[in-house]
Amino acid sequence: MTDPGAREDPRLSVVIVDDHAMFRTGVRAELERGAGVRVAGEAEDVETAVAVISETTPDVVLLDVHMPGGGGAEVMRRIAHDGPATTFLALSVSDAAEDVIGIIRAGARGYVTKSISGPELIDALGRVAGGDAVFSPRLAGFVLDAFAGTIEVAQVDEDLDRLTEREREVMRLIARGYAYKEVAKELFISVKTVETHVSSVLRKLQLSSRHELTKWASDRRLI
Image (cartoon, rainbow, N blue to C red; front, side):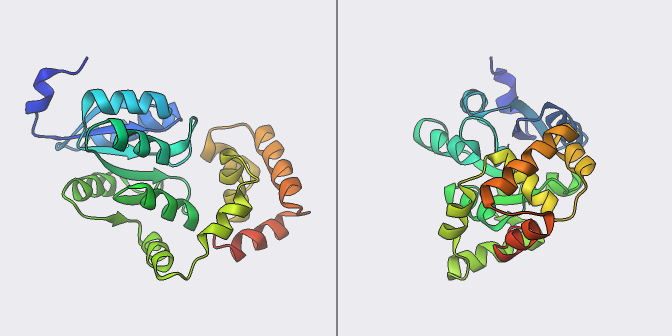
């Protein structure tokens, strides 16, 4: 149940939505080091996110883009339809153009990557709570380009529809030159699982090597 006293707490209240428990624990620890932030709750998928947000009515939801049940965009759609007015800040391992643009179009006030530091994240949460739009530096250009019409988002989405959300994450990291062990560590999965996803990505995209995959992703501004 929601703590009645929480509504009188002057600190910024935040709900963390991410399907990796270890990542949520790390983010919570970083946020709770900041005197002005209170973590009101956590969620691991769309259903639990909607329930926690509706019950706790946080100032900001720190929202992963890809997760079970429809992803961050589905959380925002459900909350906009049935829940309280809420501000969302996307936090993702992905810095691909179509992820940034898609989640902003769905209603997020900003988008930062998981390489952000704790103090930077606390600052970003405060800024979106105050009405600002916040982006990691490289990502702002994607949004400007999209709304200027210089990125063909529909075409990018059509190509990526062949891949699952996890395959997209693996594909981007491999295309950036990550070793299989580095991908496994980044995504909290086994090396064998990485190998399986890479084989599936190459097969679905009709590519034969990591070099071709890198070129494919680069041509579509996914890395």
